[in-house]
Image 1 (spheres, rainbow, N blue to C red):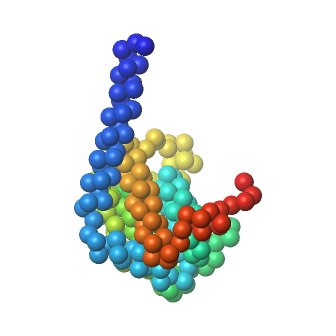
Image 2: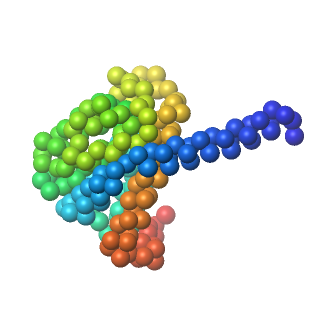
Image 3: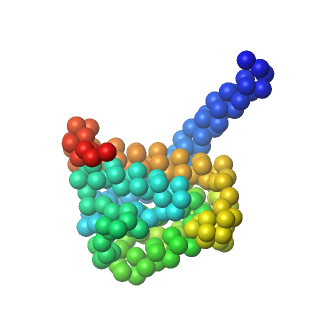
Length: 202
């Protein structure tokens, strides 16, 4: 194996270690009350909606699937079977920059309709953060792009996500998996209970 390939392997390992350290640091910086508020809002919501664009949206879909496995009434914004948002509902917004236009706009509509907002972002000074009833800040601020994610795709100017974006999405995924673990304990659901709700048509 050539030296360059050895260096590539070293890059993989060092990147994973760096991301792991980032996630641990992000979670340790959270206050217990913030985590408790997220769990409380989920448990008392009539309906739960997940909102995000791009890879943040994929994180939201993964979390929605786990909440469905727990037997909660959960939907992903933008899907054809998503009902209307009402008072007593919860909107979980995932956005690294906290400024993605489509996400911010929909979150503001949800808030106007009476939904509570849990915002997960890396930018505590963002619009998403200011609109939140419960704010979770994970990691450092990512670059804010004035052009909406979907607009960049249409224009053909979509750029690969920066490393900080990747760190935010990974941290969000792990944090939300931790929330699922806590919800399993609170609702006394086992892995077998979740498996019974797993999709059978795949």
